[in-house]
Length: 260
Ligand code: ATP
View 1 (cartoon, rainbow, N blue to C red):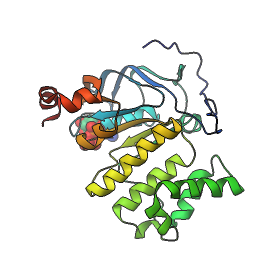
View 2: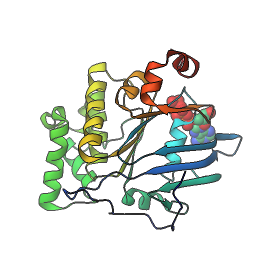
View 3: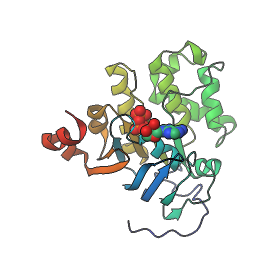
View 4: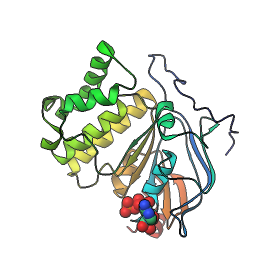
């Protein structure tokens, strides 16, 4: 890793594109070791997620994917190592300040507010960045990406299908124009058609807005179809760090690390 940390102040609001939207940032994990009190769950993990790239984080149940994403968001403390965002060391930067700097986490399980409508959920997500007409236009921007949500804008969260809930969770995260999206198994339990729709939106966000995505997935085929790069975790250690194309086409490698 080449970037040197500058200070503990997050890079909020920087990296605007020509359209005024925030562009993706570079996320670097350097020798990260993390545990929950017992043996470490992540051991000396170093991963680089370049600005505007999709990196798939792969590995079996319990490999440490969720722990890694939660550590980046400051929901789990670092035992040793560094998390660096656009050259800034995030040590000591709190959860809400990381979010303000543009790190957005979409947890496994599609957290949406069940009692609120689709529209209200989106407005709530957008409020941290927009008000008034800009907020309404940001909500419309999400409906442009996810047409099924537009048809359900007045439905309550609890009335949605699994796929619609996942789209809404993603919509709530992207409405505030994050610079890095941390996604935990967005395909979990969804029909292949819906998974393809979600992956297509990730691809569009990368290609059109330069969004950076760290995508934890057990659906290896879908993740590698959209990713630029793949990192495989096994029992908390990085065992492969390759271009996605290598992981897609090298059957010996896939067999060794991904079980198919
Ligand atoms: P999954 O796909 O099942 O979510 P994962 O790759 O995301 O797996 P983690 O959920 O990060 O893996 O779990 C890694 C290890 O850490 C597992 O052994 C798990 O039991 C343990 N672990 C996770 N959360 C906690 C916690 N809050 N307290 C103690 N141990 C935990």
